[in-house]
Amino acid sequence: MFGDPSYPTYQVFLALGAAALLTGLAMAPFISFMKSGGIGQQIRADGPQQHLIKQGTPTMGGVVLLGGVLVSVALFAQWSPQLILAIIATYATALVGLLDDIESVAHKRSLGLTPSQKMIGLVVISTAFCLAAVNICGVSPVVSFPGGFGLDLGILTTTLTLGGATISIPWIYLVFVFFLFAGLSNAVNLTDGLDGLAGGSVLVVMGALAMVSFMSDLFDLAVFAGAIAGACIGFLWHNCHPASIFMGDTGSLALGAALAALAVLTKTEITSLIMGGLFIIEALSVIIQVISFKSTGKRVFLMSPIHHHFEHKGWKETKVVIRFWIVSAAFAALGFVLFFQLVR
Image (cartoon, rainbow, N blue to C red; front, side):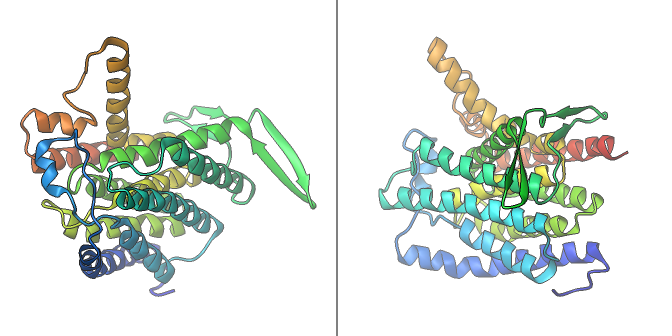
């Protein structure tokens, strides 16, 4: 471990800077490699016509982004059960995304794994994560709301004894954690539709979660969140409009899972959802659009996710991205303020 662990703030900023530098430098040769292999993003045919020019842009940049995070954490974090668990959940979800990206590239289509295949992967990952969080890290199955109200999701718990070890299975909380993982990973994935949109939005939220982790005395998780924020900076150098590379499902699904893992381990499930409010809006826009079209035959938005709606309204891609970054920052600030309602 590098740096001075007696100054945890210093460690967080070192991790952020190192991840940004490593990701930014490693991305250039990765882009060249992907171009030489003709490995590029497949653009949905029914999307905005101006996006068709992006066909063939190198994808799977999430591989480098997550590599930068892992190296930075290895250099500057003190390993703990919480950190190891967050990393396993994040990178296991990245593997699901990588398989999806490979399937998409191999078959030259914008769709990869089927929704059911993705869900099976997320069920396995979220279940294993929840059981480990509760039984190894001592995470309580109580969900806290701003203002001091708590909802006990451990009221239906089965206790097993295996080989002398006691394992608690909080069934309701288990389902809640699955929805948290599935919802956030898919929400970040849906947000990843414009150059720099997902990366910049995750950067802001992870910055807030780094502060939450720090104030919760979970310095290892603060370094993890800071490293993700830094890696997003390095990635944005190449992903800003016009993007030279996309993160792919490898990156977007993993970043959503990292957000969910940090929310559970810091016991800020609700305030973290507020911090990631932009991702929730993106996901809700798709749900509303589907329900409306199937029930009435009419569309609420010109196109979903909602960032495409504003493109169809005539906004330039860069305008949509910057304004959505501002919205994301506002949600992150609101969630951070409400976090103090939990700790005071």
